[in-house]
Length: 281
Image (tube, rainbow, N blue to C red):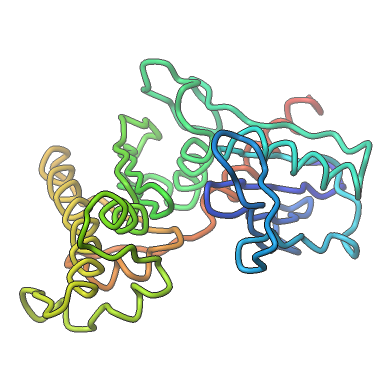
């Protein structure tokens, strides 16, 4: 790595996380900020509602990075906004938006079309393989979507699953049924009970039924795939969990897990470092 730090940007469907890492890969600064409110497609819709308006990252006191490395799965409008933010602070900063490849940083991509794998999932796989070297992994990320990745100990990504996330499940039920409420994550969190490990969870009101049912659907998917993978590979598999709804889902899980919420940024740092080493060579 050169002496200049890397600016890492993980633009997901719910928010944008960023970090600045130094020449040794150590995170020195970081944060997260929200999206502008979106209309249909990729157009940005102005809003006077402060609860849905975007906030801005405070990059004013940061040292100048040598380059920016971006994973964006949130569409063209978000990509444009990130470009504007970078131009406002560092107009000449070199920047790279990553794409999944067939092989990178010790991870082999078994997708039929490697580039079709989401850049966040790809960076997360690279980050996970480095964080838990030599271990078979099941990586579960709970965001707008819930994603699962099966990663062999040698770094081979064998495939994954995508399901609606916890909030998306609740919102879909509310929007497509006449007599069910539409719950957001904030209100639904208060409805979850702490007794999910003690036995069957059956709620006695509709809102709690929705919240708990959707959490248990998430937990059931994870547990099923963890058991299947452990049986298929005939060895212990580490379950690695992260994402915005991880707290709610882990409260319902009945299998062991490891929490890691920075896999994408960690993977971006490794991709950036590898690129710098290649250029230096």
